[in-house]
Length: 86
Image (tube, rainbow, N blue to C red):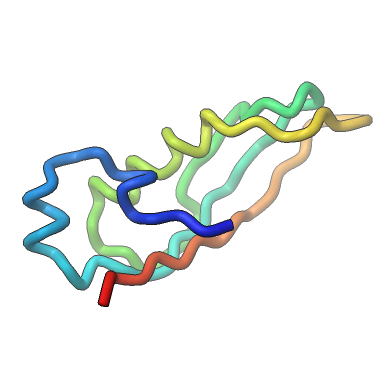
């Protein structure tokens, strides 16, 4: 999957313009229930220093849906690498 920073961060555009080197890795722990809905999403690891950006990503991930699962709830670690535009 390919995402832009704006997919996750809808905060002030001035912050993105000021911090043009905003980039790094962020690992999100995602708990998916049997219906395919995200029950929980939270930062698990990463190198991003922008707290507002890091805290915005799990909220966006919670809106995702997956194919229904047979069995029980699943927990996955999903790595994102954000690259500053060139």
